[in-house]
Amino acid sequence: MKRLIFFCIIMCAMPSDSTAQPHRIFDELLKKHVDANGKVNYKGFRQDMALLNEYCLQLGSNQPADSWTNGEKMAYWVNAYNAFTIRLIAENYPVTSIMQLDGGKTWDVRRISLGDRKYSLNEIENDILRRQFRDPRIHFVINCAAKGCPPLWNKALTPANLEMALDERTRYFINTPKYNALNADGARVSKIFEWYAADFGDLKSFLSRFSGIRFSNEAVVAYREYDWSLND
View 1 (cartoon, rainbow, N blue to C red):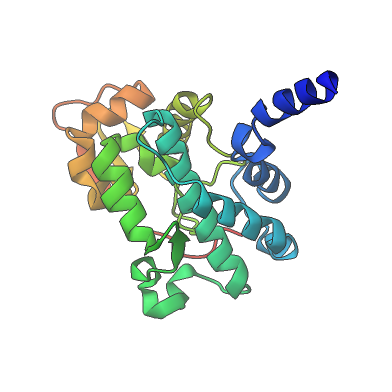
View 2: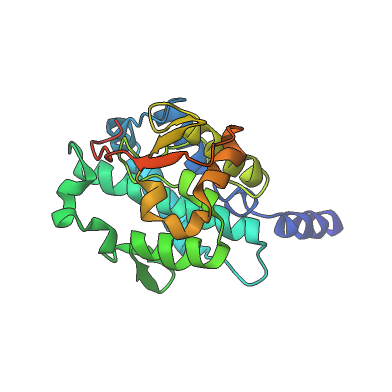
C-alpha cells in the first residue's frame, strides 16, 4: 500500500508531456512538412490537420502567465502566429496566395481562439510581439505564407533555442540574395524593412550588424516588390 501511495505521488508530481514539451507537436509537424528552405507542404498539413488542431487547442488552453519568462512568452506567440497561419492556408488549400482570403485583409479577422478571447494575426504581431518584446528580429521568425516572407523555420521555437533562432534566421534572411542584395555602395532590400522601419532604427547599421558589410556614407537603400505568391 505504501509503495502504491509513493508511486501515485511521484506520477502526479511529474509534468504531463504537453506541459513539459508544449511545442512538441508543432515541432514534429514542421520537421515533417517544411523543408530546409522554408517550402511548405500544405497538402501534408491538411492530412495532419487533426494534429495541427490539437496543437492549436493546446495553445488555447495554456496561455502565457505572468510567471513565464520572456523567452517562454515570445516562443509561444511566434509559434501561435505561425501555427494559425499554416492552419488558415491548409483549410483553404489550394490557394495561390494568402491575399486571396478575406479580400486581402485576412490578418484583421479575429478567428484565433486562445483562452476566452479571439485574436487576429495582426493583433498577435503588432499588439503583442512587436509592442511587448520590441525586438526587430521577430520579423524573421514569423511567416505570412508568402514567398517574399522570411522563410518558415522547420522547427518550433522554444525558450532553449529562441536566441539562437532569432539571430540565425535574421542573418539568413538578410544575407540571402533571393530577398536582399547588399554591397558597400547600396542595398535593395525586402519591403519588410520599409513597412516596419520604426523597428529597425538606423537600417544600414542593422543590416551591417548581420551582414558584416560596411556601407559607404553615400550608400542608398531601395526596396524590392514583395512576392505574395504562396510559399509552397
